[in-house]
Image 1 (cartoon, one colour):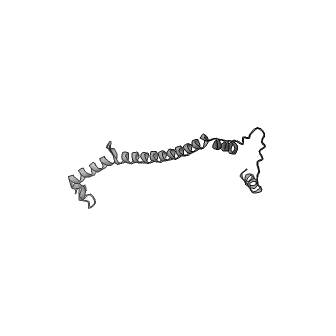
Image 2: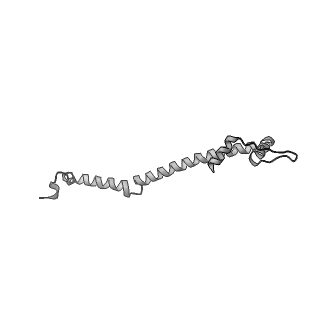
Image 3: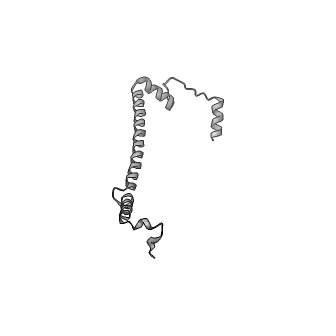
Length: 108
């Protein structure tokens, strides 16, 4: 009695089926152009495209900020709002509302 007499192993008697299975396994996992290699490269490509879009958006924001800072009014507004700068004979009062103080205490 041969091992191929089993009903589950009978299809493996066919040499063409065996060669096809070996070929498919080789092409999926072991070849230089395997499916795993292509899958990894496609994943990397998607990540790089995502990063590319992110950096394009950041560049657009930076270009907008540069255009704003290139005008005298934009430069003054940024200096006053961001860095709390003032003109020589000017006083600045920072007004804090009660609800903003409560949020700061909760954050701490």
